[in-house]
Image 1 (tube, rainbow, N blue to C red):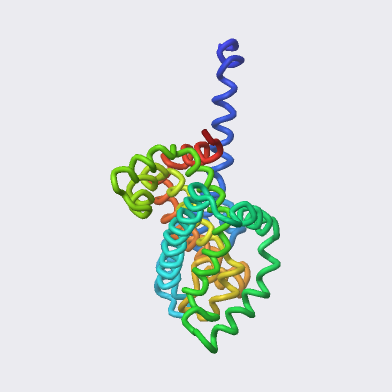
Image 2 (image 1 turned 180 degrees about the vertical axis):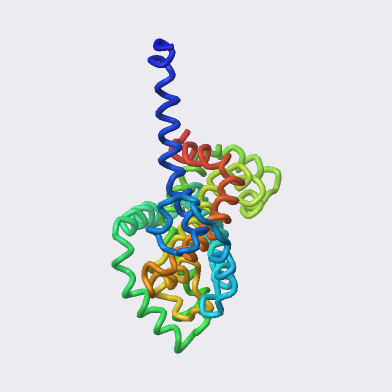
Length: 283
């Protein structure tokens, strides 16, 4: 027994401790969402008393339209994920397959731009969207489309680099064989290359969706109408007023907000490891 523990048993012990540390915050949040006191201190005794009142309050409170926030987050998150994949794939394919003037400078510029913290752009983004209100309100301040466009522009640089590394691993012989058979550039891109780089597409889609749902600063800066806000901004209202009173409702909302991410992660997890490792090397 001692020999077994010295060889492999300690690994199981560390694994169990890691699982306990990872799961405990989730169990505490679940307990807080079911605790009738609605406070964090009252939830220290896990599941001592339970109620579903906080979950019902989420959908019954007209001042806090949780259902609309949820739909807004899904719409913004899915639109950002699809747009990030499409734009990143197009840019990565162009930098990987074509040689044109300014290619090297473009890649260097994308790398340099990513080094600046996004915090520097917040004031400029606010002023830019404010100016759009007069000429094109559809993408102005308070517009979900404008928020999606900010997300797409902010993630384009890193997605281009990630996808370019993956496109470089696809042999060019496949492109040339398809061109000999009469395929156009669009047919080579959509029907030959994209299916081969599906793992990195899944990784970019998942990361974009999760980052969009977790973003609070930019979303609160752009969306000032409560009916258009996302979950990250809307849930903040539960604890910004009456601190210590609505933690139960906040915890219930957080758990529901995590479900789409969990479902999407379970669906795409088989692509994640393969996509990240394959995108890190070149043939």
